Amino acid sequence: MLDSRVPPNQSVTRLFPVLHYGPVPRIDLQRWRFRVFGLVSHPQELTWEEMLALDHKRVQADIHCVTGWSKLDTEWEGIDPSAVLRLAEPLPEAGYVMVHGMNEFTTNLPLQDFVAEGSVFAYRFHGQPLAPEHGGPMRLVVPHLYFWKSAKWVTGIELLAADRPGFWEERGYHMRGDPWREERYW
Ligand SMILES: Nc1nc2c(c(=O)[nH]1)N[C@H]1C(S)=C(S)[C@@H](COP(=O)(O)O)O[C@H]1N2
Ligand SMILES: [Mo]
Image 1 (cartoon, rainbow, N blue to C red):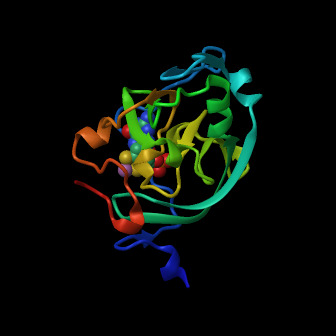
Image 2: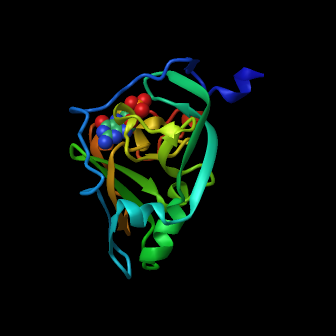
């Protein structure tokens, strides 16, 4: 039943609320760049075309926002995070990823969550280009963690040896954010 798909203290919505800090950025694809830096053998600065040439992935998943809404059966298409890592070759000591987005947004993830089956750098949502208010042209989606980990308007990733809090994590949100364990705040 639905209950088995909805984590504790969440309610299902058919809407798609828009939540973020700061204004929706205007992004020119000609100038768009995606940096891979930190603990990698081959740092990258990918153009939109170079990013889109990497392995694609389609994901169908339920998403869960820490403010209490869940949305079932969302469909995303984009780039496989593992393909980005293969290009850059993380050093053996890299165990965490800091994801960077526009408006100084950051969020931290263990490497295993970043490369999980459902994780994707999405640029399409339900078969349409991802809308700017939802993070277009490209956002990360990590559906098995609370949705604040899904950085909108991504600009790059930084590989780290030790976990470090991102934007909301510095303000009291959980370092991991598993909705099934209600890892909302610390
Ligand atoms: N760049 C950026 N990404 C962000 C945020 C933000 O403020 N800036 N907010 C996060 C939070 S708290 C949530 S709940 C989701 C909301 O995504 P949505 O607006 O598509 O529902 O985006 C996440 N990604
Ligand atoms: Mo959020």
